[in-house]
Image (tube, rainbow, N blue to C red; front, side, top):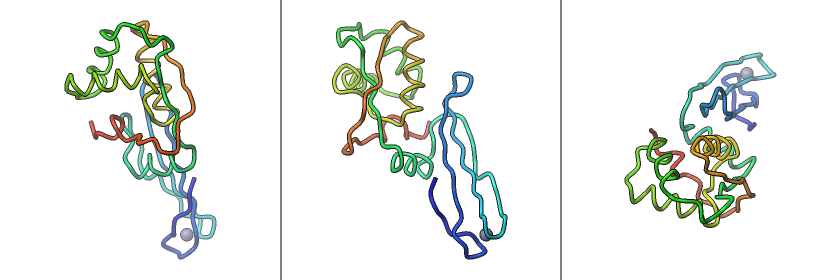
Length: 145
Ligand SMILES: [Zn+2]
C-alpha cells in the first residue's frame, strides 16, 4: 500500500497486490480516499504485472529468489517450462535456468510461488530463499508478454 494524491486534494491510499489464483499469476490495484470516499479499481489482469504495480510491491516487500532444490536437476524440463511461460530465446532461457541453478531467479514472492508451481508440474523441485536489496528483478517478469 502506498499514498497518492486524490483529486479532492487529500492523501489517498492505493493498494497493489499480486497473487496466484487458479494457477494463474494475477495482479490488481485499488484506490481509496478516506477524505471524500472516492474508491476505484485501477486495474486487474492475469499475467505479468505492470511496472506501476510491481515497483511499489518490491519497494514494500522486497524480492525473493527461486532456486533449484538440487542444482544438478536436468535442464531440459526447466528450459521447456521457461519457453512455454515466456516468449524467450533459447539463450535467454538458458541464462534463466543457470540463475535458477545458482543464486536463484529474483522476483516478487507471488511470482516465485507461481513459477515454482509451473516447474513442479514437470517434477522440478525448487525452493524460495530471501532476495537481496541489489536484485534486479525485472527480467523476465516485466517483459510485457
Ligand atoms: Zn478524495
